[in-house]
Length: 435
Image (tube, rainbow, N blue to C red; front, side, top):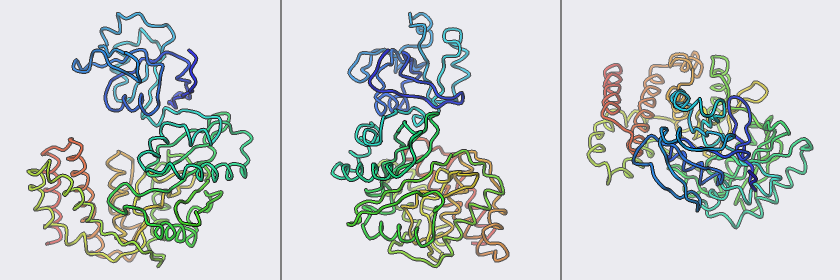
């Protein structure tokens, strides 16, 4: 099968060229739809889903396709060389037992749509034509800046030793355009990032030009990630900033040694004494989510009113310092066996425990192995740890749980058990600290 676009899937067993084979896509949920629409995959011959309501004729990228059951798949006449593309390894064993005799080892476990990559011949083609970056450009209403983006990207690439690099792929990286430059073995070598539009959440909207300048100034003064960054540039009118950096990997183990390194690095920022013209109260995130949910989830929102009175005062009792603002395990990379904290665009003046507690909370939520609260507090505060520090830390951990509950409520995944667990945790905290 010959296609203009070439896609490869990064799997546990290495790279597989997905466009070289007819593809059977497993499931027709939102994840599968993103694979089709974002990646513009044209070689899907059928979709399999156990949900009867999803079965039947559908239109995929202008072509008629059919969603069938696993039983129907066994009866279908399929090409011998087709692949089964699975969106998550959660269902791998069940799928293998259903149809492994049909496909032998021709399964591609695409854990996330990020693992399915379109490759390009150069950075210009990637920025202008990759569907992921096309979507981001459209959402950010920033097409007028694309010529500048291409120009600065090509200039930075020309100053690199990329003779062994011939693959370029987009990265779905939040509110920026990002391109990964890969070598002949498809290993990431460099990452180009171009930030130029408003933040997408509750913190800064839109991203003011003076904030962009302040963030870049603070990063340079503190020499943040100087080992990672090859080149950086900011527009004369402060409309955008661009960086070319060495590519790290995200398989960092969050053991005690790395946690000490990570918490020491973020503490250095908190204790730097630098300031910038953006002050954010973390509780505004609660207010933002509650306001957004008020019309659709009024009963549930009313039930959480008591939470505000129990922890709000303590959560707002802090001294503002310079913080990362979006500190979580996804923004930590390993480069030369050392952890580096990346994506500093959300830097602002706020509560240092917002950084620390959000980081620890999401490590646990996503089942990353980490250390205890007592060890976190000991590493961060050392001999200066006071009861007031502990009380505020645990309040902010409850804040993180509260935010997650509101997010799950927004996505339709919240349950009574979640809010019950949250309130019970808060009551234990109240009793321990006599609030």
